[in-house]
Image 1 (tube, rainbow, N blue to C red):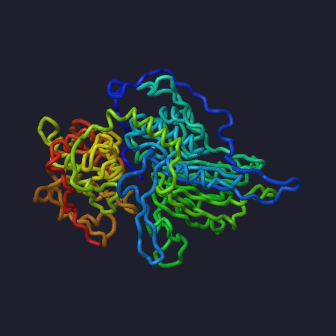
Image 2 (tube, rainbow, N blue to C red):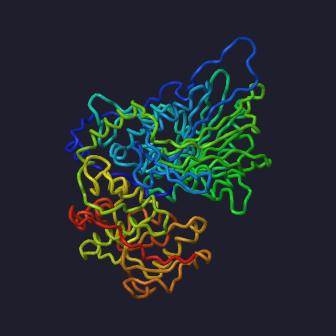
Image 3 (cartoon, rainbow, N blue to C red):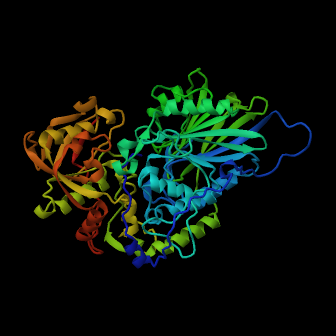
Length: 607
């Protein structure tokens, strides 16, 4: 999901001191020849003479892994499944040890199998991957036999140069190599970015498409990220880049592939929708009122040329397998596999050798849970253990104590308990006059990447919050800003949660204690915010008065559709959001007096 984006600024010195990491220099750029053409066939064609006219190609896909190598903790690690009696069950899922087993099992008996992803493989990652600039995740994806992925918005978190390093390999320009004698090789699958060009040259940043081939079967993959990427990534991440319309770009390259004789085409799109049910096994094509799927992907799917046979999507972290009509009125498969490796999609594409195209009437697809009751893939267990050893000196340090789960990412409420804790931490850290004199703090909901889970993740003991767990909640390490905003700008910012670019899919800011207001969802647009209900410490907001407002640098730049927050003046830059969060945990909890989940009574919601 969209989120502020600037990853950890861990210094080389701190890493080296804490984890004894060796450093080696030199960036090397080399993508293995033919890596994009490999087929992961398991089994062989039998017999001689005529080949059958059609062959079933298995397309396995997933999206929005976000560096979740270990199973995601708490409610963020569950998948909803509707039972035959209509009740909904939460099933723990995800973790690359299980994802690898699931994919390898699924490939058995499928001589033509290709694995593709819909973007956000890295970025906003837990400490195990984020601390090492996501090298562990790229290494895991190589072992998973990923054939191709689109870029997502989070692939731009650290800018185009770092994205190129993830593709081509080489040690980090500041932190060097993390292990003595081991150089980062980069991704052995292509990252596709068809709709991202360099401003200076107009040329694509990365490959726009690739063609997967096996025994004469050819399938083209075109990869795009959402056109609105610059609105949800820090300015530094997208500097010098231009993002183009998804439909126009895909149609352009579909024509190019068609001219080259590639008639079977799959689009990998880092943009998505919202199905009417959050259960992964919901029938998205149910005809009932209010059923189906909504969101940006619907219009995109309706505009993409019929030359494209299936759409693998992402970004919204939802699970769906739907058909949306193409411009000629024919149904076409549109899929998404939730997030964090909790699901994978298995799609059967029937390839006609005579036309070199997919027989669209026979496309079948379903999502499958990556359950945690199957055997772990030993190579992934050893990869996780290797990187965990390097991360341990930093990751295992206790930061505070909690008395119960404090939900953030896993909370479906508009006001999230962990959102309140984070906003309070930012206000407290920046309220002193010499720190900025903040009176109120705002946190964007997409920047809260996990829950704080009471159950121990390692040997630290239940209720202990480690640095690694805190980092997983706030992985961007955005610097905090305090700015002057008028009361009128404050009100405008609250209205922008539910209007403008956020009207169709509201982004409700998490607010610090003392700020209260009513959100009336029976109304539309900006009117949903009841302006005369907005109070700070019991007093109505004065439109003419100046307020000192704390927020991360992403919001202070107007990110996530909040131009009013970008109008701040008299800026003071403080410590990072992660430092504020950890300082608050240390100040407000102990082993004998752990922090309890706060009340969520700041926003009164009328439905």
